[in-house]
Length: 386
Ligand SMILES: *[C@@H]1O[C@H](CO)[C@@H](O)[C@H](O)[C@H]1NC(C)=O
Image (cartoon, rainbow, N blue to C red; front, top):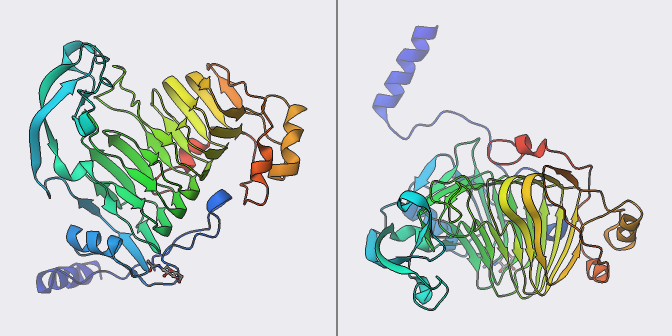
């Protein structure tokens, strides 16, 4: 019997390269919780596997509702060529042995003062595909098969009015990680109803997730893994600095069940006019800061674990509620529908934050539930965990 099957398989593979074995039907798994609940992505559109990166690029950007399956690695590295030009070694890069993270001169960043006094010009060579994300239009589900769905060398950009997008169970990696401005993995900028779930992000030059300055409205990032391990650390310690950046002009962001590890800053940085509900996430091995709450940032952080996080909250110029004690946490009930849950800290700094004056902004919104803080998130977040 076994040899018959082998004979059949070899006959099939020599007859045609496109015969695929029968497999499970692909579909989005579960539903979004929190602010982006109601996101349907491609809805009932039949799921299909693009045959090439160019077909993937087209399907993401067109105006057809789609369920797009990544059943293997789609590698954009080299697809747009490479660029060699003058960039810089920022003043902050004092890493030994020419290590650290140098910069592409994006928007004159090297010369407008942002790279610090003592910046030096250097030649940089980078992959062009990495620096701009793939345009994602409305009504799309982008899902990975098992743990096989990889987008290498290019990120995804949901912007300019695109809405109703689901990204689930894919790994985005290798966007010029050696360079600041080398690329952003996930961008929302002028969007609505975006659900990012069970995504892994690693080895990115700039932001792992960025909500740009336009209103990105309702976003849920859940069960995702932000892996900051890098050989090109802006902080010279193997940790990625530029993780999650939330500065939209009218954004509602739910962060639930995410595993954010080996970062050293901006995990997340918040500003603009962003209401952030960070619940049941696990921050691990952060050598700098997790939250940096700028003016306009409104944050409720509850039920999270901070393990080996040097500075859970760097600065609070906005409004921040860190669920400090069970008495104070009852203030959440009226607006979030539950008493806030205590955060848990191991070998970490403190969070603080007792401001409840912004809680009415949660009125009428879909709010994620909260469970007891748990580090088991490390094994449920990321790709191949559905
Ligand atoms: C997305 O789907 C909605 C609802 O079916 C529809 O009204 C809208 O035109 C679609 N958008 C695009 C860009 O296809």
